[in-house]
Length: 156
Image (cartoon, rainbow, N blue to C red; front, side):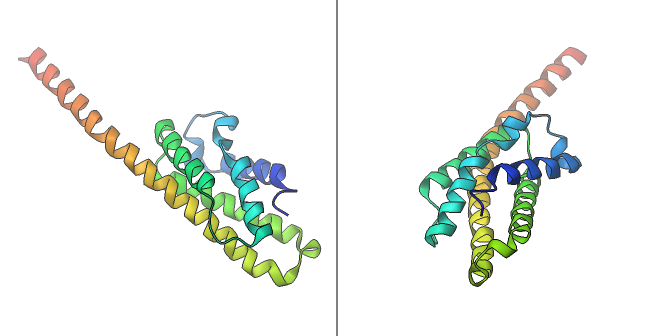
């Protein structure tokens, strides 16, 4: 279901993101916003098809890169969470719209796997985001300290 509807999921997600003021405050292209989502949706489809409970190392690496990219684009952690929440909602809506063509005995387990999968990727994105943030903060503090010192020197 995810694989067959991945383009529609991405388009619907972009529509939802366009409605979110917090996410729209980051001026990036749709291509940059979509980022690695097609690959992650393909991996999610594989997880659901195979019944695997582990998120692939490839997906975790992609999520880590996503976290670094979002930090560099100016996102905040709440914005990372918001975009994942919107993706989860869009996937749930897709599942609901295709309910009649699904194996209902797998619906609840698959819905739980989707949530767990997205949560694992979000955790990895936040972990690397925080690492990037921790590196950037001392540099920005140092730059701020230098700027303040230069300002005082000019005033004095």
